[in-house]
Picture 1: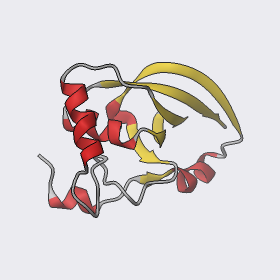
Picture 2: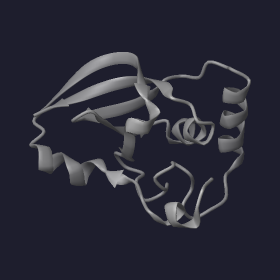
Picture 3: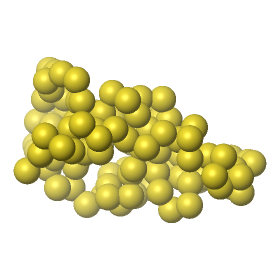
Picture 4: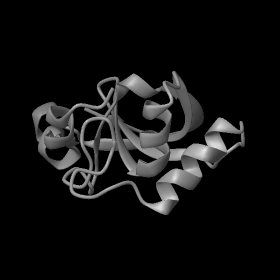
Length: 118
């Protein structure tokens, strides 16, 4: 159940986390399944979504509903794109897909992973 409190808490910002880990290099890992629960933030849209990747400031839009419906039908969607930093993931592309996956209780999602090396 989504609570009002969770909707008010923003995602973690990649730009705020990166200096803490002395990130110095980037390596493309490729497309692989990742744990949805380890997706903790966003590269550039951390203020738009709450920790469950639901809109913070507005109701779900048609795009979010279409993606959720497609997942419920078992359709294969393009992989999301993420940065991996210390076994946690920050979304570059695919915020709506992550939101739908979290809402539906999906354990894994395909992602094009770019690992940050420190």
